[in-house]
Length: 290
Image (cartoon, rainbow, N blue to C red; front, side, top):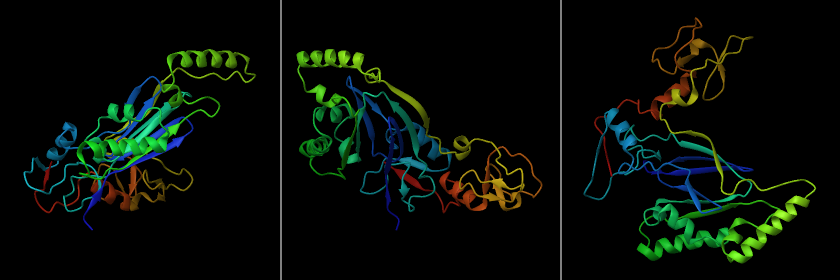
């Protein structure tokens, strides 16, 4: 009932990739040209100074634990026994690939405790996604054995009408040059005029990691002009102003409409917001260890 989990959630829509994560199950992107990009942030207390400062600023204590137990993460889903300082608010990042494609490697901390992002990407280049995932796990186990959850998912996002960049990586330079020449010639004569975008280019569309919902939701007050009801910024349900709370104020708001500093939240979402931001009633000092 009190245990918790990390989460890394990936949505792929064409060439657009959106990643939401809490904890330290990392997601990396390997693109043509050998460029490896990190699409998540590790919420590990030992390495993330901002997260340590957030916990201590809220009244928590962070220290190194020399015995078994404790929690090394600042964000997770669950872990209710640790206290209100461990929040489930995800870091979210969205990028757009060139139409040359790329490879996603999503893995739990049993992989990343042993392999760096570059090591994992290089180890499985030239292999199919299925074989690549097996090789990453095998390499982690070969190095240190089964010390922690060791899970890996590999997803290739590739153009449908070209040889994949993964295949190109394992070809000789002569064949690679010949392929580029053929592709250039083919593209010139293609009646659709389709061409590959710049090799390995990744466009960053969005990134947000704040635990304060007002930072993420903005300060606009959404209302229905016909009914006079206000729209909750989280659940999107229209409610009377008297039934909700301002994002930044604790008291119940009067029925007189007015503009607040934060977005309108219904009473239920206000409770969830307080919990996620570490504003639940504390049962005393909680020490989070790493």
